Length: 186
Length: 186
DNA sequence: CGACACATGTAACACGTTACATGATTTG
DNA sequence: CAAATCATGTAACGTGTTACATGTGTCG
Image 1 (cartoon, helix red, strand yellow):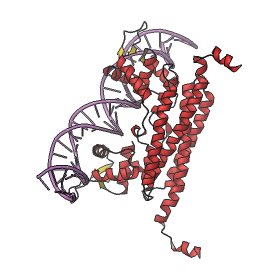
Image 2 (spheres, helix red, strand yellow; image 1 turned 120 degrees about the vertical axis):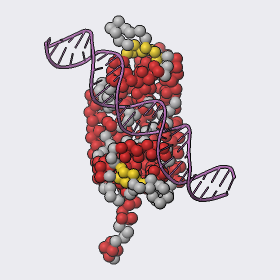
Image 3 (cartoon, each protein chain N blue to C red; image 1 turned 90 degrees about the horizontal axis):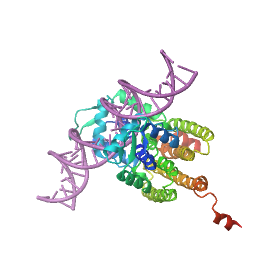
Image 4 (cartoon, chains in turn blue, red, cyan, green; image 1 turned 90 degrees about the vertical axis):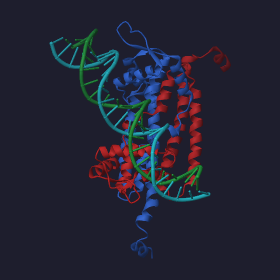
């Protein structure tokens, strides 16, 4: 519901037309998740269908302005008031991937972790560069970038954690005290 | 693609039937995101349609076993090998919410942050309790829980960060050094 | 003129999700 | 016997997403 609620929140500020909405949405949430213009229109149709917005008469240059309704305003208020519950979030693909990897002897977990860490560190660099480019007037965009940084740092730490946990938890099963180790221990 | 790839990964270990798949999936990824049985069957149909699995002849008790195909195996390998790119993840609803909130003077950001933090801290408690309940044999489930803990901690830190950023960045616009503050400062 | 940004819209699909229908088997 | 669990499946919907069609205006 991110796009739907996001567009509705922008319309709660003032009426806007489709193309304008994409610009505003991207200006505030940044280049991380570009928003296809087509999706703006499909989402607006659905919002109109649900009685959250009404298409006002076209503007001077033929732009199709949308106004928020009382019902839509209630939805936005509810959105801002209610926390995003963790249980309601989409499944974490990375967590699932590793959870299924540790149960599968054929999967090289170290390689999976390493590939993921490389990408996360690359992303971290990208975010740092983007933060340097953004001006202090882009407060919203900077906050989104900070969210990405915090998340990615947590992800890297979790990957390290997984690696150390797995060598402790899985090695003994794969190699139940081989003879060489017993002999070496003497 | 979490469910689809997850089920495919389980089928890469050995053939299983639908109901069994749900059990395994939930045993490894835990109670955070329960998996509706219906979805297992819809996903299996789509996997079959795409040539990733084949429905083998029914087992002795009439269970419908599914086997992974070479194509399916290739998909699983690709899934484990390729990192989950940050840009490909679903939009972060919380980040978007706050990004749009800071640009809207009518939204009480402190309240939004506070509501979210309360829920995040509650979730953190839940995770701690679940970790205590889980046995050390549930390695996968424990790792998923750790992921949730790491993420939630990062989220709380980000919320604090937002709060302090916003009082710096927005207050001056709303209250451009009121007279009372100047007088109080003497 | 040709390319590019502005602007609106539709068709089609993927995945996730729930609700429902149906039957067999087990267990208190 | 009744309730619960096992087991399979379908219908329907919602959101997100892309690809495509179409037209206007502007600027080098």
